[in-house]
Figure 1 (cartoon, helix red, strand yellow):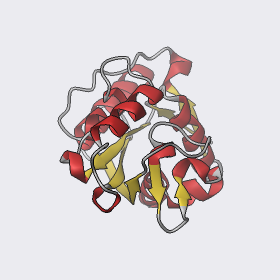
Figure 2 (spheres, rainbow, N blue to C red; figure 1 turned 45 degrees about the vertical axis):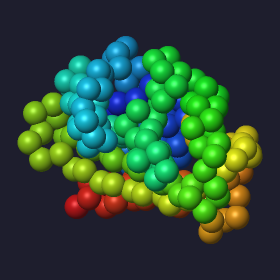
Figure 3 (tube, rainbow, N blue to C red; figure 1 turned 180 degrees about the vertical axis):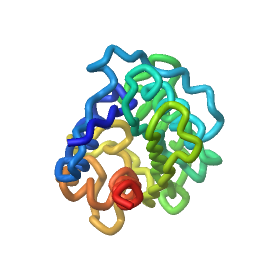
Length: 196
């Protein structure tokens, strides 16, 4: 099995990646296994931040690296929280605090104007100096609910309505979510590209 380091310390993402890559022939090892500290994400886009994280992990481990930068874009908030999704409520923000801030910011926005999408940018680097990173994007359209529903998932999942399933992302079984989510779509593209 080929070893790949996953440039993330997010437990929710680690679980999803291990499920998504379960049958891929790759052994995905979280960067925490190598005591790799989180990279400083100072890019201005999902792509830049994913490349920064992948290069950081590849440099410190000597292994090929996969990094994801993902987040929620809400149309009524001009695309916020975007690349700041994990720290929308400030540095050190928790999922509950981010969700509270999102609900507060949207409190006067009617249902018809609460369209949103999750974006996932995945980057694969063969090594630290890889001049041609594989970059894949997945998008998942939905809208923001007025209150939280469901206990599965993480982040904004309890507030993200999935129209084709008639429930929130946090109400979906993980196998279903992994098939239709932004991360699932990006990973299918990435596995196809790596296999080439």
